[in-house]
Length: 123
Length: 106
Image (cartoon, rainbow over the protein chains, first blue to last red):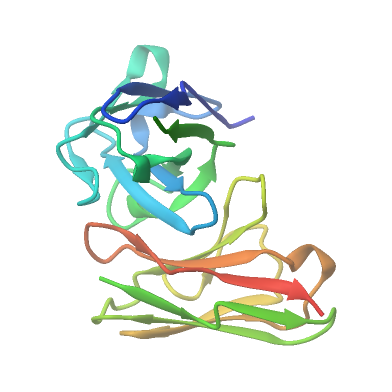
């Protein structure tokens, strides 16, 4: 069964850092693009970042560019999101999501999602 | 690319036909997807490429449109369809979602 399991969320002060993890299983991890999508309390979905299937191409939302870094460890079938210089606006549930495929356009729509991990930024 | 969904919420009864619209700030061809999201759950992809139903999604869901104007239609609303629906464009980075349409029980 395909599974995506996020972890690493928590309570952090503004300016702090966190690393989110997404453990993937049930599919060939290296063959798919992966993304992070977040939802702030009471708000809609916001795409955050995408990692191409080759592991080298990365894309970011303007709101997180320069502060967030997406990466993966294929041997551990785990996707990561390093979040630095956290701001109050980063408070959200963070979901990892699998792209439908390796290439455009399939890579940019998301057919499997995890249950999310909550990041709370507050002083 | 900004996506504007309307309405932001609606009340409907089981069996009703429901239509949600999504307008893009510039042309995106057919590069639009629709998701269903229930509280505390992971979002579900329903439709991609504006009108292609994902395998396993009930046929009461349908999508149409191209360019800047798109529509999600639920032909006969079922109890399990009460949720928030989002459109998403994948024409350009940054990928963007619409603001959502909450479908509530009348």
